Length: 267
Image (cartoon, rainbow, N blue to C red; front, top):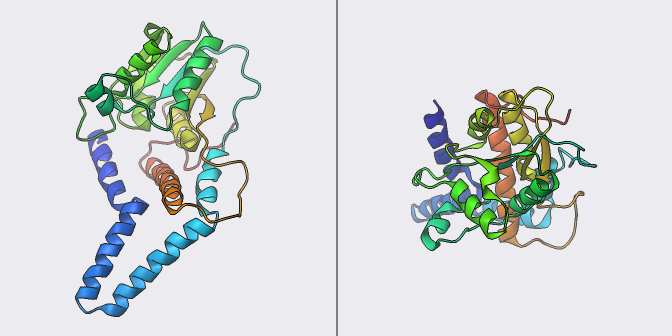
């Protein structure tokens, strides 16, 4: 069941991802125009223009993304005692690390630097990294090796971290890292991940019976919805896609029993 969910989720998202959907729609419009279905083709092109224009002129990405990013506030102040800190994969690029021999990180690298900072702030806390390969075509690569190399480069004790290397998605992050970390009742565990991804992550960890305190990192939007000058189309579409991916993931996790609720909330 786990393998089927993983591969089907990757395939389904490839079709419904907004930028891909725009390309498919343009292709369909061109076919209709060449087939003499001019009105239908023009209607599709008009719908695409309205959709892209709305993303650029209206704060739609703000709402789609910001609603999830602001769902869980950061712990302020930080707990006096923390028993463990978990870092979810997602910032690592294993293929580039393997090809060039140096740790490759993406725009979510802030989660890693925060993990290092918290690890130094709580020197006695258990440290757990969870992340295998989310690439269906390269299951031989692991995000853990990228993190290990990066920690070593930064002068952090990479041997202090427990590495879970088999998970392929957020639910498996929670399921497979729990026996490795062996959290005990009453302990305080901090979960570090991207702000947009916090609700789905918390839902998955609660589902496996592991209560965590999320520490949001890598915010994409401010605290408030902004109306202003047109947004770069590429940036607006990318942010909208990221938000839709999370909302789709929340729904899929809830329907398949991989999350404790559709939209988890702070307790």
